[in-house]
Image (tube, rainbow, N blue to C red; front, side):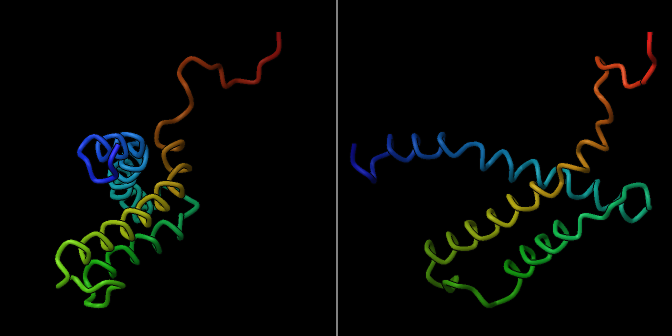
Length: 115
């Protein structure tokens, strides 16, 4: 299969679907986590998640890039790759918050009673 054919691209994207899911999950959970941290409901604070989000926003907003945006397609691709990588790192640091927010499993008995 040719590297630039449509079938190759679709196959490549579907094999990387987990990355897209993690990025979307990071975006979904970051705002509620920030709200719970500011209200004092969730501790410990995941400082690395906040740092990675700050870096991602700064990379998008500041005019400094690895590849300048005036090189249309290539300049935008580097933004997508770097911000996507940072959002993937954020998702890793939100695992504790997701577990806290979802609570214990309903099917498990969390009491420590003995027979």
